[in-house]
Each structure stands twice: as structure tokens, then as C-alpha cells.
Length: 72
Image 1 (cartoon, rainbow, N blue to C red):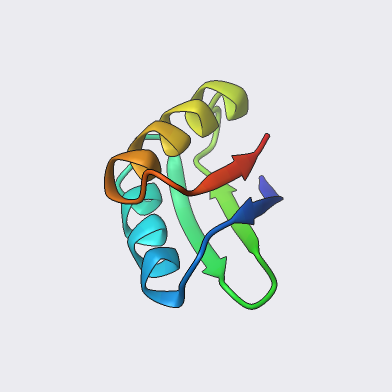
Image 2 (cartoon, rainbow, N blue to C red; image 1 turned 90 degrees about the vertical axis):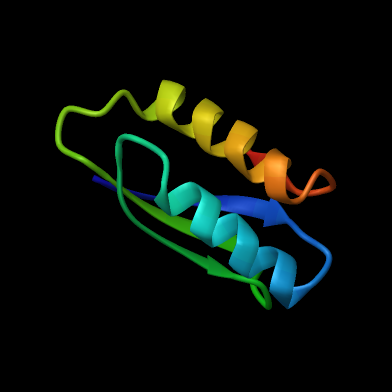
């Protein structure tokens, strides 16, 4: 399943760090962060619990860029 989330991030490099952190999260098949659109496109693994996975994604993203936000 694919889903799109609005994000808030200050720079393109930070967006890349967020994308890398999200990609390493269990339950994520693929992710693409678009800095210009302030958007995160997420493709979940089959049978993944979307809400719990996204909580982990946010936690992992905050580790690399504490000012970032994902609007769940």
C-alpha cells in the first residue's frame, strides 16, 4: 500500500537524511521524500501496521533531524 504524508523539513540535505532513516525502518518497502513539495511518499510492506510503522519512521527521522515533522 502506498500513502502520502505532508512533512516539514528545513533543507534538502535534511530531507535526504529523513528519507534514509525512513527507508531503514521495518515495515517500509520504499520511501521518497520531496523537499520542494514537503511531501513523503511511503510504500508499506505487505501486512505492515501503517500507524505503528509511521510512528517508528517519525522517531527514526527525529534522530537524524530533530526539527523535522511528519503530519500523521
